[in-house]
Length: 272
Image (tube, rainbow, N blue to C red):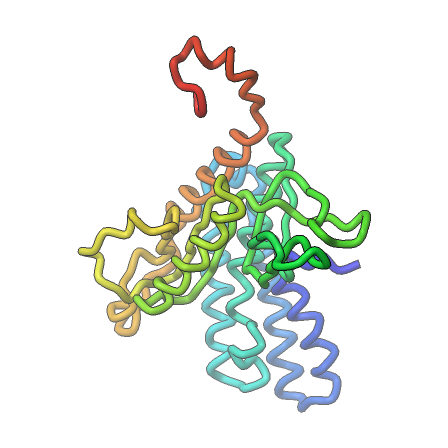
């Protein structure tokens, strides 16, 4: 059974099926991609993930991401519309998050397609709730809840952190994603909304702390204009920071805070 969170692996499997009717050139290119993918997966260091030391792992990731981008330019069979290169990093994040959280004993569940991002009261008695779903690059949570107004026994993942993963984010995309983050937090005020992007294309002099976006991780630490001239490699320390942040957030949600009377001693009644 396919794991829907292994988005790039599933993409390769689908292309393998289609390639049977394609030219020998395309089949050769695909076999090269599959070989590169296997090499990159072997390069993921389990110890490095647990120790938040991703230098070696991201080196292998870098090589494979470069390969997928080259294939997209080289042949339309790997067209960006098929989400070929774009599915590598979301899958990588799933791999390191799930491995680290599981080894630490932190409950973790993931969703991508049809993730519930908003639940509001319906306009009539026949539909007491409106449930809005959206395809996400990645969503992680530690608990499921019954789907409001849905069939009995149908559950959805309560989002703890939602990730949007992009190659580049400009000011227009940023505004749209800020609106998505705001809508998410109307229904799930405790959820975090993270943007993960290779490069950025907006002014860094503006203050984005007032938005509903909790953090923007720039994986190449580079503006898009500079990347067009000389693209920097993916920076392992950014992945390490993201992995640590996700682990801390998910682990904190597992802690029982106790009754409000017990918090009175600290003087902080909500986060005490």
